[in-house]
Amino acid sequence: MPTLSDLVVRHTALDAADLDWLHSLVSDWQLLADLSFADLILWAPLLDRGSQAGVPAAESDQPRGDSGWIAIAQMRPTTGPTVYHDDIVGSVAAKGERNLIDTAWNERRICREGDPDWSTGVPVREETIPVRRAMPDGDGRFLGVIQRSTNLSSARTPSRLELTYLQSASDLAQMVAEGRFPFSGEEPILVRSPRVGDGLLRLDRAGRVTYASPNALSAYRRLGLHADLVGAELGRLTAALCYSDEPINEDLMIVASGRAAKETEVESGGTIVQLRAIPLIVGGGRIGALVLIRDVTELRRRERELMTKDATIREIHHRVKNNLQTVAALLRLQARRLQVPEGREALEEAVRRVGSIAIVHETLSMAPEEFADFDEIADRVIAMAGEVSAPEAAVTPRRVGTFGVLPSLIATPLAMALTELLQNALQHGRPRRLQVVVEAGGDRLNVVVWDDGRGLPEDFDLDNTTSLGLQIVRTLVEGELSGKLSIEPREGGGTEVTLSIPLPAS
Image (spheres, rainbow, N blue to C red):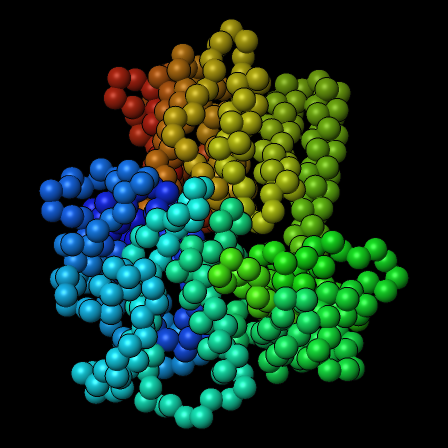
């Protein structure tokens, strides 16, 4: 399905600023759909004949809509039955085919005329709302029309909650038509922001509660409220519940009074409540506000547990890294005391193996999760191998390609295998060039370590090799990583080692 951006760029004369406004509207119009108990479809005027696609109209020009309309976005309500079970986005309507859309566009007003439509088998009330973008000069620029379709099949006498919803939806629709919603310059609303069904308060101009939904009242009961919410000044009441012994959060008074479109959280008695204010500005003046409320106590508790767990894991990795470095230092000290060259060399190899594991744990100790940027690890392993190579070799291993982020279960054995392969190439191959080539993509990670050194012995057999380093690599790749290992002579001289490792599904 094409995106809103695709449809606007290909089929309309709206410019980049118009598109940004529509994105802001669509990111938050679930609020209007839920308050209206209705489906919303956003129609934009098709590119006028004679215009060129991709060439925006001037700031002062208004799209005309002479060529008809295209549906560029759709939203279904979570508070009532939907009208459209199929997706409408991408549909085209000719001029005159949808009279209410044409009327709302031409007359720049909300249209509610007409009897319910029974063409789909259920009664549907259609309304249209012109979408206006606020402009610095104050005139505004009309971008399209919202079609609001309400399924009346379950119509009944509305409750106080439903009447409040509908009145709030009417105010919000008027704000859309006046270019006052979405709120210009405000940060985008997060996915976890409170929704209409979580809890709703309606405030008057003075910030007093005129209606409180059952869920909103329950949230305030958990904060410690024992009186009625209706009639109370929400800012002062909330501050008294949550900030009796400490300075009042300034954002709280702004949000709870409905003076600005912002969010905040309050906590009292172990309960955490999220507040989001939507000022209602109609006809140039603020007539009140909506405050959406959500009890996020359990959510924040889980987040804190995860943060504590992550911090504990990072601390464990940090301590493991320190312990491994201590082990490496002891082995290095012991190697210096040995007079037997074979023993000294074996201990130095052990130091490098322990060091490669320590590098992984050091990287994990700074990562927020059990994932590591393996490019950093690989570069440090490669640098370590180059530092311990014979001075006369003057070889600097290079990495080509990107590993990306890998889980720790892959990062540790892969770092050890890479260490062994690099050290083996430098020690036995005496190459002039040594490269690690990475191909990451799809469900496998392919790593090729090649050199232009002496090459493999004529009788080399991986299955019967006596090299401890290659035995370790084979065990790590095939045993721990469930991958494939191949060692072949390289065309032109040298050796080529290929690792093919399966990656877990993301």
